[in-house]
Image (cartoon, rainbow, N blue to C red; front, side, top):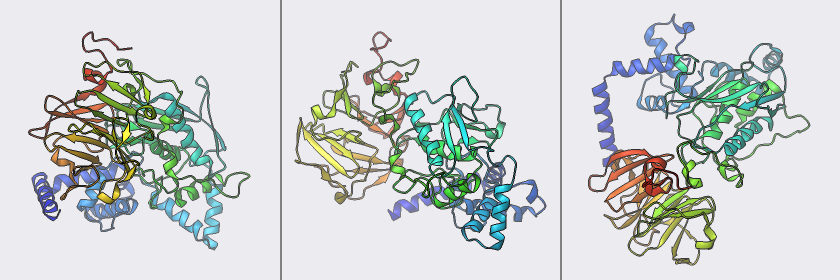
Length: 513
């Protein structure tokens, strides 16, 4: 690990030397100006002081060590996907909330002035309507609507606000819309595809939140950009909330991850209650852990599917799957929720079958699966547990706890890698090679995904192919990697370009269903 770290530091230093400090500084200045750290109010200060103060303010909002120096941690933070709303008012808003939290005579006066202040910083009413104008094509409409309702409910649970969905033909106070590229909000607000600014919103009375339609949106806690978290964050802006520097705040400029803690931090709750008051008729605000707001696609199992105009076929073809694997006959097993599909080598796909019919005791929404091409056993992974089946019978008798062997919790994908004749687990930016039996990580692992040149992080599936390649999946994209060189050779959209996935008929060019 130490040698690998030294190599990475060497590469980073070489890259910085090649690009040059002036270029890095210019990019940082453009970033700081875009997000409200370099303004006309600070223009009177000398340039070095002005820049250093802007870096300090950014480091403070981003919860980084405050040095005023453009160090590697600060540069790395600037490249992370974030909200497109400027952070200009974060410091003043935070100061006001701290005064309320630790009251004194001045704080009491400040609080009264805050609630009495008119203008566009808050809505003049507590019953607000909203409309979802459109949604990403690869996500089902019903699931996105469920995520939108839950995102509004997060704020109504802790304040006096109430929300209702407006009819499609009538007016709405708040409108949620997905756009591509420049959408008449100014060039600084143009969306740039995956990464960068994911969304932005406008303060009350305009009531709009815009989302990058080309982002790899997901309703899963572990894959893609979680749309629910971004929805709840941008709705906060439409209510008048600025960005927060508080740890684990939903309104931090960099979107939080769903976990065991409540979705809203104390600062989020205090901020919205200062604008609209506490929940009516309830002395205690309702807070729920973030882990409950996951997999909205599974909330309504009978919901209608939103189909891509160019793709027909089974349910998994239209947005994503939980796991995928292949056996020695090149027969795929694709898993989604509590069902799975089998796809023959020629692309003919079966009807969805319940997991329990084939593998009794296997839970729904598994996270990774792989078939050993040596003995044909199926390996399944979910959370910190793993299963091994030979046919329909469990080999281990009951699920095993895999953390003891060094396996990661909640893996992204699993793969049987023929050159090593071993199972491999992928998690985020790392991969793990397992010893025979599947319960122990080999020495010197995990290693970085950089070993698989061109394969992205957070994949959702991986398959060995009979032509000697490995195909990796993430959202609606695939990457084909050559086993010999461990480099990506081709990429594209798997549902429309890989006939053996069962989403179209390669012979006729038409739809299977």
